[in-house]
Length: 347
Image 1 (cartoon, rainbow, N blue to C red):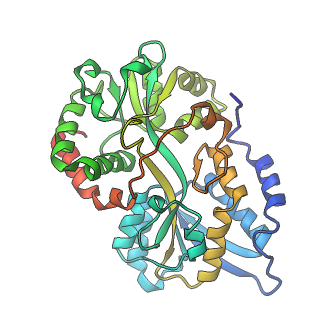
Image 2 (image 1 turned 90 degrees about the vertical axis):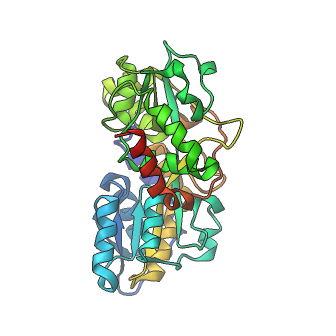
């Protein structure tokens, strides 16, 4: 397996600079700008925004915060918001932004056409920039891949006190449950959640990396995590993280039916946007081959644009069938998912 150092995106950006010289024409006129509200961590967005500015001459004013805080800020600012772009880490938040009326249908059709239909809003108000799968990881020395099959099968009694997972307030878990509601209805999903919780090895706590570390430490035998967290751990400078990640293997659930649950980091143009043309140039830039490849290599996320290769780390896990559910459903069923998780005692 080839390792990419997540902390060293400079070489990747050097190739990005060369490849993108044609992508966004440099504006010889007075400097223009675009204002971005982003829930992505600064190190996962600013290098690309800086390169966009270098190539286009368009200044990017960046504000980073949590998804929900940014959504509340957009709502409170209303038409006076300076934001042109909203970037989130989950499709559910993009759905909420649309429902709150703080984004608009302003992304150019040719950009929407670059992204699979299920990874964007049905009315074209937002689209995915990168994808990640929510997979089962298992202890190589205690579990055989043949023992695993689907998310639903994790309710089997053989997994009693053997599963680690984040809490119910985590949007990735909420979206997983929402996808199950979309596929099999509330009643069956409630039954699943009730039984699934009975198999928890401990009270849910920590992030996805913590679940991997718990499996490595023998606190549980399997966990549900996003692929990019495991990819980050494998390419970390922390030997303990690498060791923990190497002790587990990836299993792709539901390959014989609907496919493994996926989610996106995504982007929308705000309702209050004053720089719509520049906003579309930024969307175009983030969907370019070089930007998509940067995310794949630097953060081990799957490109949304067809034909762009995943990182060596991701390719080592093999191909998989992903759920083709339109991700708007993750937001549509979010409140029901929360109620189901709460009734099940998933804290």
